[in-house]
Image 1 (cartoon, rainbow, N blue to C red):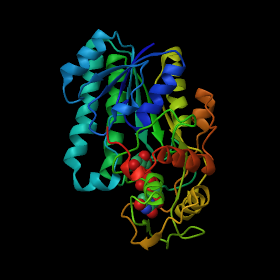
Image 2: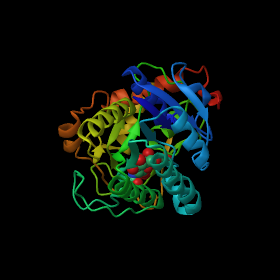
Image 3: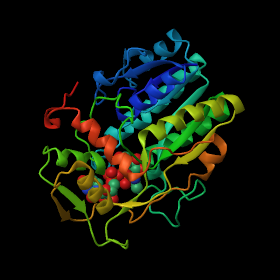
Image 4: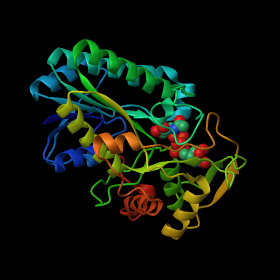
Length: 332
Ligand code: UD1
């Protein structure tokens, strides 16, 4: 299939692009390179330097490439920042998606795979969280993801554009075959922050609270390997194109790991001391969040292969360690 991967030079986007190429799709990456990196582009994919806020660029990319599907990964994702700068998240995440849907409708593009998030659920009222759990986002980032799901629903109904909304839990790790060489810029997520501390780019890891109601007092999350996530995108596209039906599914490993468990695993695997200190709780952090991925398993035949904590940490460390000094990792 001809597929436009919007945000394909980014962290998850580059892994998804590689997966789709490996499965024989014809992929064009569309990215404004604001956080995506040229080094994440592949020679067997086309590249368009374009912006989702420029409708005409999206429309031209879809029309010229006779695109049948788009994968949309060009969103901002820093939860804390979204509470301080909602405008940035409204414009990029929401307006960007509306532009995508309008371009799809104008050009006859049939399928959209959307990166949604567990953040749509908010504070969980039961665990593991399945897709029937009420959606009450606690941060503006999660709100944008939920609103976008509603747009997708309406464009499906009114325009017949089928979608797969993939509610990622905590994406982590790097390509198990070492094919992605760009590191995330200014990361705020736990594992990249730990990696930057391991290689001396940061002084210490701040652990956001150790007085939660969990066995070791730190928050528990469901970390899912980015190669497993990437495979789910390809399977979801197969599903919606074969069945002519949209779907919304969780993507998680169904395993909970605490901040301290991730840190201890990283200390063991990297052999680095990784200094840390206990800091204040981060507002809006639920104590524990784990997924039920039953629906993705049964509808898509998806299963995780790389999402154990050791593989998550090992592949991250390999990505950071490919540079003699990861403090100097290239920004392009
Ligand atoms: C959040 C979203 C998730 C989204 C992701 C994108 C929620 C519940 N989850 O994940 O859906 O895909 O952002 O960025 O909104 N931590 C530290 N120190 C740090 C960084 C993190 O202790 O320097 C802790 C956090 O408090 C948390 C855990 O590590 O307990 C994971 O944090 P993070 O990687 O930021 O992801 P979430 O906030 O869980």
